[in-house]
Image (cartoon, rainbow, N blue to C red; front, side, top):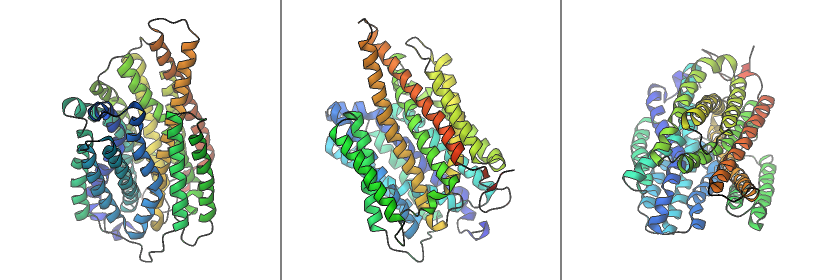
Length: 487
């Protein structure tokens, strides 16, 4: 659709602001709640074994329902799924903040996941369909990609401030300050565009996709808290493979599939989805283990830890905007995504040199800046490529695939790197003479082993993305259309 016929066009930058608010809320929610968990546990009195359910309940609902949420937006209009997601997320956040029991808190987190699965795909789909001019599209996706890359770090800082000066409950209440104004503005600014044909929802595909993604996320979560050999882990992961294989078999045959295979068959989009998932796996090591290192080894407070990540956020913002506005149209997504993966690997290699007496300025800060530049090269090109050239009727489900790959990547990273970390700590402790400093030294050794693995994941990502993504440009200056071969 040409830019001048787009009903959003005259209000496009205001709409971008609303989308940015919603995206920031969804992204920072992951880390802001993690920071608040110890205080919530002390207040509500639940066990360490139960604590993971506050995180897992959200991940299960969010990850398993994303494709359905994206498809509902395609069929009935993204305005209403976007607003409904915002309002539902705010109500669930209010209930969670007021929770007086562990069960109510977990239920509220699951409800956040349900409404987040409606909200996140609609946000990216609205961005893709609102900005159709290639020059403006690059700027819009640069802003969106910067938010996606910095939201987790902002969540660490905001969570630390709210928990330390107010209460852990404000880590949930704060979502109302994002969601409610955004919902009001979205109601006034966005024009709903439903599919006039409104085909039937693919019920078999929906059931297979939802149950398969649920089993996948649950299996990885269970492996973290129990083990890879635990019966539940094995059953869930095997079930996930069977269910998702059945899902793709069904999608090839039904008239109106939940996920049209043409969305992922394109090499540029497929490579973008793969890149987002791989980055999600490796990024987990940075946020989790580096947060532990800063607080437990260097003695940083939660607020100091949040501030420590800000240089990475600044690097992402600057890089994302330069890449999206000046370089992407000229070079295409492949060189940027490959460069980003290599910079991510370099950042992790710097972190493998951490010791118990390392300093933030000499050992942590350089890695954070490298990672920020790397993520600024990955996220905007990947987001733009994942939705570029897709049929308007499929934009929501293509956007849902972006979030699904992020969620699955994070789940894999959580399980894989946590188990590797735990094994490395145990092996180091058993192989050295007991001493007062052994526990701390073994823990830092576990961090560095996890960083080595994450560096390997990034390096593998550079090879995979380089092999899959063709040499194309996602936007030619002054002309809309399909990607064209780079010169």
